[in-house]
Each structure stands twice: as structure tokens, then as C-alpha cells.
Amino acid sequence: MTDDLILDVQGVTKSYDGLEVLKGIGFGLRKGETKVLIGPSGSGKSTLLRCINYLTRPDAGRIFLSGEEVREGNIDAMRARMGFVFQDFNLFSHLTVLDNVRICQIKVSGIDRETATQRAQQELARVGLGDKAAAYPAELSGGQQQRVSIARALAMDPDVLLFDEPTSALDPELTNEVIRVMQQLARDGMTMVVVTHEMSFARQAADELIFMENGHIVEQGPPGNLFSHAASERTRAFLNVIAEHG
Amino acid sequence: MDIYDVLIRDFPFLLKGLGVAIVLLAALLVIGFVLGMSICLLQLYGPKTRLLQWPLLLYERVFRGVPIIIMLFIFYYGISGVYDISAFAAAILAMGLRSAAYQSQIFRSAFQSVPAGQMMAARAMGMSKAKAIRHIIFPQAARHAIGPWTNEFSSEIKETSLAYVIGVVELTRQAHYIITSTQGNVLIVFAVVALLYFVLNRAGNSLLYAYERKLAVPGFEK
Ligand SMILES: Nc1ncnc2c1ncn2[C@@H]1O[C@H](COP(=O)(O)OP(=O)(O)O)[C@@H](O)[C@H]1O
Ligand SMILES: [Mg+2]
Image 1 (cartoon, rainbow over the protein chains, first blue to last red):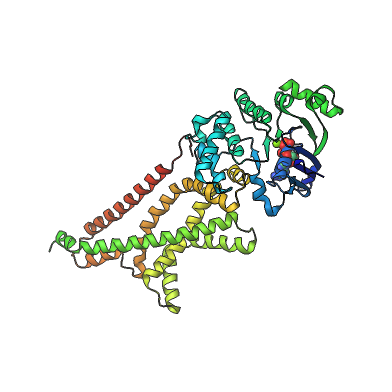
Image 2: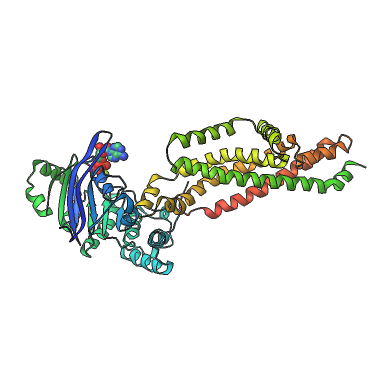
């Protein structure tokens, strides 16, 4: 039934000490689709992304990646096929940019060093950092670090990329260089779930917008529809706030 | 014979004592390292059951809480009652086990100073916990640990001299032997001994500092 879905999230729930943060979330993602997840702070967006790759273990619900169920038992292999981009980059600070991008190819996927190096250089070029291979993370700007972390995820050849507010830790003038990379990925047919408040990105790159509040999906649909006539009052109010505050 | 002739004649004994001190030091540091690292890894990444964590904590408290001289007596006289143990072996054991308690603390705070996001990112990329510890967390923790570990190294050099209370013929005891064969030139003998300890200490520290510089990550301030 779901074989053409790259990512299929079904009925995910999660509570933290009695507080129900996710109340039965389901959505699917076809190959090449980009879905943008929006919602007020605390609505459960990060928790949802982390449940998808079991960084946080869901209480109930099922996740399928390209038809294969994500379980505790196969989690390392499944994670290797899902890229995750963090708000605060989390580059490995003791490794050069090149090593950041190739270490998991070598240590997780078992790819030989030479192939991994080539692939790393290719992905670094793709995010516009071909000349930074020898640098250490602490020598880069935030925008550059985030682009390296995108390259690091891409080098694993993932089925899907998950972004958790990738530009929220960046100064406004550094946001665009990251957004441009993500827009290019969307055009190249990467399959992505993106939590962001960058509405320009949502408008241009998202096939669908998902509005979350209080652990529920309130509404989802193509960005054009949601921006012009969202069905829910809550969605309209939220989009207005976002529009005002950029 | 004046004191300088005695010193020159007996200098090989001092060097021999220094050699014993170095072997004792190396052995206790190795025991302390292996055991201390194991304790640290079990505390941080092992099962959180009290059955495991409680004894580890007790071990650490006891070995850090009892003076080393008492430990030396307990290990030497305690063990030699049931098993024929040499004073040297007893000293290695007592001091190694104690160093493990200190080293486990050094390693634990070094591991804990690696930001949680590093483990999270490594796991998110598909690394197992063991691989993440080995390739991502350990190399960063090592950089945090090396400074405090250098302190531990220095204080253990000095404490090897205490092994003489149970009869280990290390540098300090060799010095005593020499003193009994000279007439009261205590100060000069101990000055030479102090110099030997000092040189050993500086040599070790220089090596460790060089290693620290080698590990330093550009642009990264601790
Ligand atoms: N590890 C945790 N322990 C306890 N509560 C948590 C934890 N992580 C998230 N929460 C709570 O879950 C809710 C949703 O958080 P989150 O998923 O981070 O929301 P969002 O990303 O949409 O801002 C918040 O109320 C938050 O305080
Ligand atoms: Mg969040």
C-alpha cells in the first residue's frame, strides 16, 4: 500500500513524564518531495523529527523508510539512510571538514578511503565549500558549518534528509547561503522534511506545508493554498505572525 | 671519604633506585589508566543499575579517601598474611588501584565536557554507541583529559617515594642507605635525590605537553 513512499510515518505518539508532546502524527513523503513542518515553539516539531530516526524513541506508532520498518534492532542501518541536520550543526570538532564528511562513510558504510574522499569532495563542492576541506569547524562561520553538516549528511547517500531549524542559530546574513543550498537540493530531487520558519523557502521549495500545534497536525497542503486560504483559524493566525516577524 | 666521593661511588645505587621508582610509576599509571578508563566508561555508558554503579562509586570514594601510606600498609601486611607478595608488587597494586580512582574521575569529567550534540550527531549518522565513543567522543575527551592527567602523573612521581615505608628499595630508600654510610651529610644527598625527582618530573611533563600541543585543534578553544 505504501511502497511508493520513501518515508511513511504512522500514528506516532510521545510523552515526557505525562505531558503528551505528540498525539498521533502521521504523514508520508514520496521520492523527491519536500515537506516543510511549521508550528509554534513547543508544538512538537523537533520531537517528531527525532522520533523518525529514533534519536527519541516514540511511545507508539510506526515509521517506514522505503517500505522497511524502522525498529530498535535495525536502527543504526536505518539512520545511515536518513540524514539529520541539526540547528546547531554538531560538526565533529576534532576533525577537519574533509574528515567530518567522510568519517561515517568509512566507519559506518564501510566505503574505502579513496572513494569516501572523492565523494566528500564532491559534496563539499556541491555546498560551495570545496576549498575548505582542510579547515577545522571552529575556523568556519556558522553558515559554512551548517553547509558542511549538510554535505556530511549528503555523503551518506540518504533516502531522506531531516532538517531541524537549520538556520535558527545563524545570523540573518548567513541564513541565505544555507537556504540557497537547501533550495538547490529540493530542485535536484532530494527527499526532505524541513522544520523552518523561513517562509520564502517554504513558498519556493515545499511541495507541502504541514502546520503542527500541540502535538497534532492541524492542517497540511501545498504552500500556495495554505498561504492564501488556510482552512483553520489557527493556521492563518500563525502564518500571519510569521509573516510579520519574518 | 668525603661526601662527594661517596655520592660518586654510590650514584649507580641512586640511579637504580630511580629505575625502580620509574617502573613503579609506569606500572601504577598503566593499572590506573586501564582500570580508571573502564570505571569511567561503565559509569557513563554502562547499565544504570545500582548493582553496578554503587560499587563503582564506593570504590572511588574509598581509594580517594584513605591516605596512601595506610593503603600501602594494608596491602602489604594484609595480603602477605595470605599470599606471599613482595613489597614492590604490593606498592604497585595499592598505588595502581588508587590511581584508578583518580584517573576515572579525570576521564569522567573529560568525557562529560564533550557536548552532548557530538554523540547525538554520531548516532544520527548511524554510528553504534561503541563506534561513536571510539571515533568521536574519545578523541575529544583525550584533549580535555591530558592536562589533569599530567597533574596526576606529577603527583604519582612524588608518591612513589612513599613506597619506601613498606621496604621497596626505590630512590628514597637508596638515599637512606647512602646517608647511613656518610657522617650526617643528609642535605646534600637529599638535594641530589630531589634533583633526580625533579628531572624525571620535568621530562615527563615536557613529553605530555608536547603531546597536548600535537592534539590541539586549530580554532578550537577549550
Ligand atoms: N527531552 C525532553 N524531556 C522533557 N520534555 C521535553 C523533551 N524534549 C521536548 N520536551 C517538551 O516537548 C514539547 C515539544 O518540544 P519540541 O519537540 O522541542 O517542540 P518544537 O521543536 O516544536 O519547538 C515541549 O513542551 C518541550 O518542553
Ligand atoms: Mg524545535
